Amino acid sequence: MILFGHRFIESESFYHIDDVSSVKKTPSNSLIYLDFNEENLDIIEHLTCNEITFALYVHSIKEVVYAENLGASYIVLDQTLAKDAQKIANEYLFDSKILAHIDNEDEIENLAYQGIDGAIFLKAIIKISS
Image (cartoon, rainbow, N blue to C red):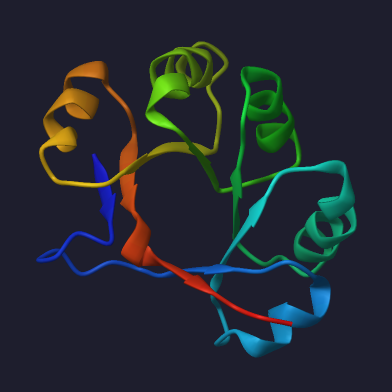
């Protein structure tokens, strides 16, 4: 199980952007984080064309499937979707890893029992303004 933003486990940060120009404000080789929606398809295309690693925050199982097909390295979602998303990811052998948002470390055990690929704490996400 992968953990991002845990207080005593060193991990990569995610850089949350809202537009293509914000990518330039991130460190080189950054892991980009953005919300999945149709308005962000141009950003996703830019990231894919430039071979930039990215994570998509999704709100439904349909968006989980879209995120995998769009090339997201990580699919981030609420815990309520995690078990179903992980089952689908395992069934279809997704390349993307499923990450559930968590607020405290007590939630790690539940996610581990469900077989979720990983967890992400809010502190692992750095907001980049345009």
